[in-house]
Length: 185
Image (cartoon, rainbow, N blue to C red):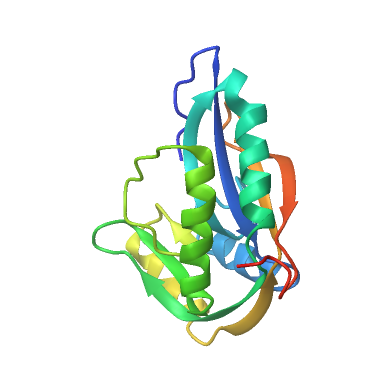
């Protein structure tokens, strides 16, 4: 992704659920193998908040609201199974969420409301990108490489990051989701 133009009083934030090791390394290697130009910008993850411009002065308050929203949501299991694609609308191949899709949608709604009004480019569809902005042959290669994927992990921590001018995401804060049965939800 190209870094957006920021005024001196703005920052670009995003939030994601990271895919843990060793699954994360497997998906990153698929991304590297298909020549994805963005492979090293951010580890494999499920986006919760896409890149959002906010006022630099508002960042501490936004982080407090994200922390409260995250603490009020319970951890959940994610099962990645098989490949999907957004082609022809967008040149993206991804790992499908066979379990945790609805929980991820509910979590995204909760966290997005903490950040403030956002205008996403596309409707929210939880997934883990494994190839993007690569030629069709490489996208096909990535789709084939994860066709037999079937793995689970616990979504327990939300990482909030800042987008640097070089279009690489820099970790800023981590927020834990509530243990099962403790959120009061």
